[in-house]
Length: 63
Image 1 (cartoon, rainbow, N blue to C red):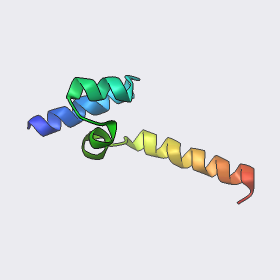
Image 2 (image 1 turned 90 degrees about the vertical axis):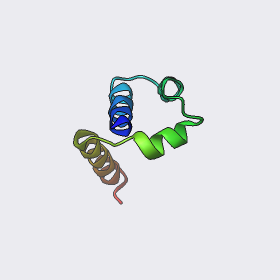
Image 3 (image 1 turned 180 degrees about the horizontal axis):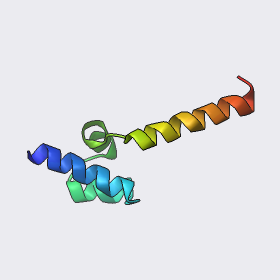
Image 4 (image 1 turned 30 degrees about the vertical axis):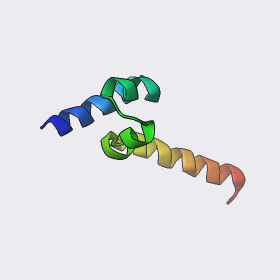
C-alpha cells in the first residue's frame, strides 16, 4: 500500500542520515512529531544499540 511505501521510505531516509527536517519536507508532514508518530519504526539493531547505551549509563552512574 501507499502507507507501507511511505513508512519504508521514511525509515530508509532517516537511517541513511537524512535529517528529520529534510525527511519531513520531502514527505509533506506539517511537523516532525507527526512523521515520527506514524511513520518511524526503529530497527532491531537500533533498539539493541539503545539498550546497550542505557546499560552503559547505568553502569557508569552505579544506579
